[in-house]
Image (cartoon, rainbow, N blue to C red; front, top):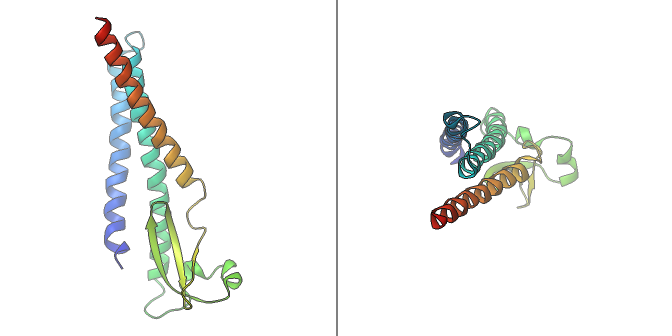
Length: 157
């Protein structure tokens, strides 16, 4: 499956991004000292830290999906139902899961049944997508605000 190639690469890239943004955010705050903070520095640093939080939460979701994929692949060829899909909810679906797919936006593990239906498992916690989107939007708002504050200061001078 394509998830076996894309998932580890995406996990690596997003986790490095999380660490990089956290280092940048804390580094900018530390470089200016508490008394040297001005509004654009604080807004940019907070934007980087919220971006790091979004990347970290998304990394957690990817890790949960990766563990589900490892569990599914561990069942061997032709094993049905797929192990992550064989939980208590499988009886409610009415058909055995024969395959799976990974969705990245929102991050989730989806079981596909023999009759063409699909069902999302609970391998990824429900808070992952809302937390990642919320932190990402907050980071974007803070970054735009920092730009506006810097531009307003430049015009005033």
